[in-house]
Image (tube, rainbow, N blue to C red):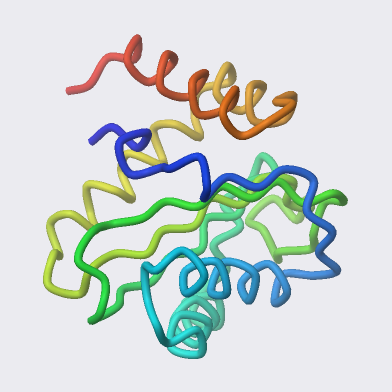
Length: 156
């Protein structure tokens, strides 16, 4: 699963002033409704927050990976948020998060959910992708770099 196919430039946000993890989750939920992915901001926020309550999606190496499912959306959406200041995320390695990659997945597509989780996981293991995210100047540039890097990656 190639993540760039579900990542739109209007869902990439760089150097966003966010005070904490909850604000980051709320930001993603707000963008979902603003960009027409979902109409119920509170439902998205609640889903993302419940997932965090179950177990933090701070997977280490400065990456937060919040995700939820929703009834309303028809297609999977990926959001990439680079906070202006790293956020406490209760990560596995206890380090703050400077990259947030959020997924909103249609409820009826369980297989897609698993494929997207695997795809993001694979991206997050690539140091060139992480470097591109951390150094990008704008969303179009970053989307292009992610696409190019992901096209070069081997998929099994």
